[in-house]
View 1: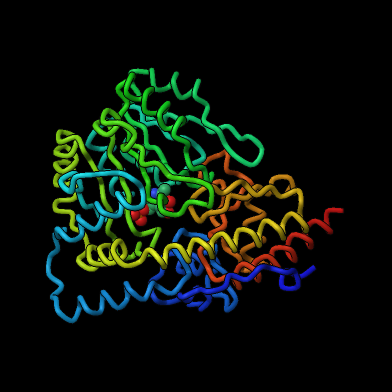
View 2: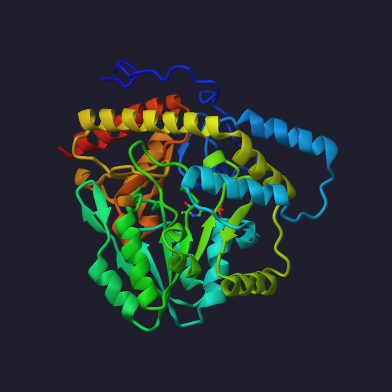
Length: 412
Ligand SMILES: Cc1ncc(COP(=O)(O)O)c(C=O)c1O
């Protein structure tokens, strides 16, 4: 049956526009340009479910706020304002129950930049950095590009979710060469939101073994109904003193192009070392003046937009789950506890993973993030970005069905 003929409960009472399709070819979108680079042209009907930014119209509060800012400002060199730091502090308190001091905040041009700096500041070449894999691919680059040793703690697949292999985690943390953990919380791509007990266990093991924690919490605002994100450093003063938390408004409010993120470092010595590394490495890293203002506006004026965007993400997820369960029950959709990135296992179809990517791109003009880029255990998965107009999801499912059926029929 066609996805459009299936009955969906509509989302009613939306104040914001989440349906307008904005084509982003030739406007400098990284995600869209990658598509052109792959195919050699922009197909008219391309649907991008790949890189984790949103295909929605920006929140009008941000657009209006930035226009007003431009009317009264000049675009000189920027430094984080008190208003920006206070907005972040208040957001962390209101939304995540974490009370911070504004002094703990260091601005960085991005979360990737934040964990790259941390790896360089707090480890030496040849020392071990632990990742819980499969994981967001630039985390591997943070380790290997700086000649650190990758210490892999593989997550254990349990049906439609993952668990932490704590025996392996502890053994690896105990190795004196392991100096740092990059924790991804919520976890991309598995969609896990770590429970309090899991975070406490991670924290205890790291403290006992002098492993510093860099907690990437960029996805912390997008958590599925029934789940709660807990900032790792909020769990205890001891954890806080052993943690660098990297986060940003960029996933939540689609501001990645404004390149503004926060490294929150309660421990003054670590904060100083982080700062020195920033100075050393990047000369003089600067945030973007519009990013600082965009972040301030988002954290003070856009909570209603966020609640509505979460409803759309959940709606899109439901459509995919229902459709795939009916048309391709062999495909396993992993449980989505957090992030707007649905992790889907196509392995049971028996299509080789590069072949699958090729088919989806070339025959259906559908672009996902391929599972294998997140590590070898991601092979055969596709990561589906749900932050897009629902009509993209409906059309994407139709094309997915067509392509898969054509291949599966041939193999019969
Ligand atoms: C876990 C995670 N960390 C960091 C980033 C990128 O952060 P930034 O754009 O601030 O460097 C992403 C983007 O998808 C992500 O998923």
